[in-house]
Length: 424
Image 1: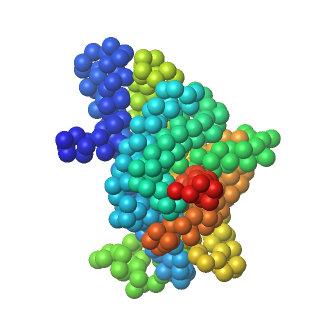
Image 2 (image 1 turned 90 degrees about the horizontal axis):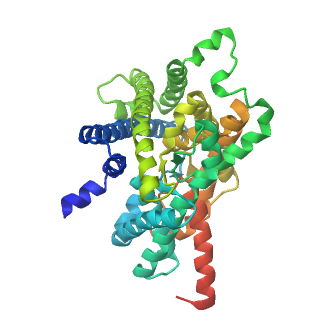
Image 3 (image 1 turned 180 degrees about the vertical axis):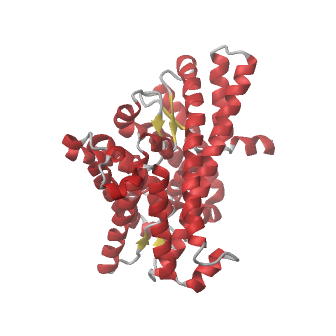
């Protein structure tokens, strides 16, 4: 039994199972079923490896930034918050996640919201936030599991709909959706981009640059230069001694160079993985939607849109990072009880995705505006739930994804209103 649970806890395995099922429903030959399933799993693992490498590089950048600029506060990154939630409410959290995943399938079957999110780590993080909100309102474990699971399942099916008009525009089809819990922010970036709709054709990838900067047209070169600047500025600000604690035996001025170019290599790995598994899982879902869940579509992680506008990803990352820093400085200026620090890895994935959405409707101008606003939201929205989470022992971490905080705040308000009326 343990081995089955261990297998089913892996997103790659779940995607592989659905790919296999879809190929069987298409009555493919056994060899084609095996081939398609393996390509889906391997492609997703390549994609996941790229994501992990990118995250590792950017977490190092976080450390340099915080040390170099002497910033004290809470890093707006979900991993630490989830870990603290597991310590306090592990069983409730796990069961909320399971109920949420199953109700996602149910809502996809019985409603017009046909999106199925398969990246279980993302749903698990959302389950952690919902568990904390329910427990903070005083719900018993069984009620918290049911309430949290239903909210998670509905949000998983519904929120991708906000982004679907832009996904259709970018991809030219309705076969896949985005399933990453900052979808309120991504759709907002798309609508903000429409402010520059008359410049829609001036996309980030068609950006006209002076002759001396034409090399930025090459994504690998442009990405490398930007990351070299960020790493070296942060490393020099942090100083030789601190950089040495991260670089080990590598010279402290060589280490930022390797980190920056490793980031670029990791991005290329990530994009290759996307191209490998996306075609397979999309084809498989055609059969699943015809036979089991009519019109169902897979809602996939945010980097699946990076290939539509790679340059917009970097513009979005930079704009979101600046927006996050602005929000952080405002919190410091108004003497907020807690200051949230923008995490480079969060800003890259969420801000980069927002850049792609803004770019789709307003070109590079839309990419910058949409991602800048999303960066502000990433650092600002955790403020609403901070008192509740802090009271539950999760005061030294924060949930950085926008949907977590928006939906969590709405649920918090509803539960506390009901509590004051009927009591629990």
